Amino acid sequence: MDHKSFTESLNNMMGEAHTLAQSKGWWTPDPGLPTALVMVHAEVSEMVEAIRNGNPSSQKIPEFSCAEEEAADVVIRIMDLCASRDFRLSEAIVAKHKFNKNRSYRHGGKSF
Image 1 (cartoon, rainbow, N blue to C red):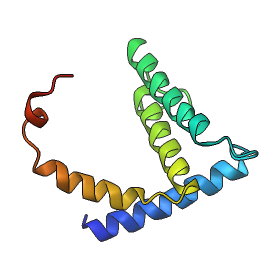
Image 2 (image 1 turned 180 degrees about the vertical axis):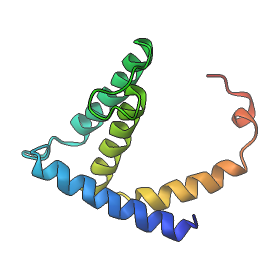
Image 3 (image 1 turned 30 degrees about the vertical axis):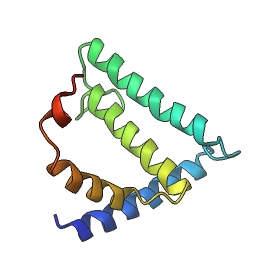
């Protein structure tokens, strides 16, 4: 996929994610940036727990594992948050990916 198609598709999906989250009450009232970030972190934690529990099939979307479902929730929350703040997520992803291509191995020797 070329970068233009990626950014257009992601921008559209971000708008849809934010509109849906608004309609489901997640922005009434506006939780504020720190709380919205905690909600992203909660989804990451749920993904960790799914893996700790053997990563069974999701009960909500059984064609996917629980970790896949939670990873989707992480991305959906990020898209929603970024759309709510007019962050240029798709463009930043493309720019950061381009930047990362030229970074050294483990960014010069960083460990985990």
